[in-house]
Length: 553
Image (tube, rainbow, N blue to C red):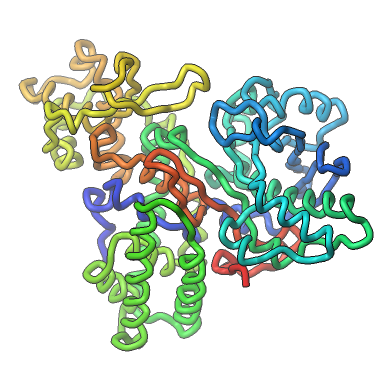
């Protein structure tokens, strides 16, 4: 049986992409698989009795070392904010390339807590900051200091002790540019260094609560139970700053989606699944339900999706138990086809993730295809013709060409860069001034504009000649030729329309990171949890590949 890849015009709608879930392809899971045989160390831990000071953690293998440098700071409750305009945080971190010297640590102490205002060097690879989930953090310290373990039911509602508010890389604020490190095999997967930073920060949070509790009451304090540690992750507050990434990196987006779709295709084409494979699928599915029932949010939008997902999963499990036989040929194709006909997008994409769990041999080779050297596809083929370009637009963008951008609702929003933090923002062009500063993120509108511009041009006109008089359309001409080669490079939706839900763009990216428990705080920012259930650094030599379905008891 030859299964077709899913049609981009069906798949690349934001409401569909905003229903994706973590999977075996997610970056934090592939990071742990890559670094499981590296040597982990806590190299420095100099905190005072209140938990303020510095610490260093490292991963080493052969002649390579990556070191997380942590600075825990004393701030008042009034200074603690997850907003991008914050200037102080409970902790700040950088991932240093190699073993930091005392001079490095002193230099970093002057700069890392300042974040954007500080300056790093090519020796630093990523930069981050984080705030305590104060109620949970204090509850854990108080419980441990009295000799008790914390309330796991309370912990499960939040899932972390700290949440990061930004993780930077690739040359920002003086950090090492990507070209310096991109050929290192161990970090070839996307965002691998960012995943390393977040993972080691998680360990720091456990060490910090143990340290404070011990100093608070040396006679009675106990350490946080390792099983509770494993089932705590790191939270993250993410806003619109993340959204333009998937527009600005079309080839990378294609490679992420194509890996996922290739995995789905190959799994649907399996004629006979083994008993072991079927057991892994069913066990992961059943265990995963706890993550859904522990998915807490005050968002009415998300609660509706969770309620529908829960109902659909119950329907799916009933179907598996009563009406389905795994003795069927092509069992996963039959499961997928049933899902398409019977459940919502949220559940369809959840099942797609579940279907990957038994198949390391399919997933592992795809992980290394998820990066991209985008520069090699940057040049525009100026010798191609207007006829060829028109054919591409009519073939690849047929849905977008139907949008009428003369209607206000289709042209309502504009993207801009904020002055104070240089972060992407979105505003209503009919209510706010500033659309003159609009960023080129309205790809659907610009594609339509391009199509109208070439409509009356001669078929034989060369692209290079066309661009001499239409330089403002260069960016979408480039995208059209990229989409010709990379089917999933383009969101097939309007990113400035009145119906836009920006959190769909955030969730798409975060699902590939490996985030769970999406908690929208508005349609423009959300909180998530990463590494919840993950093995501790001391467990990495041997751990269950399906750890993401562990949960607090």
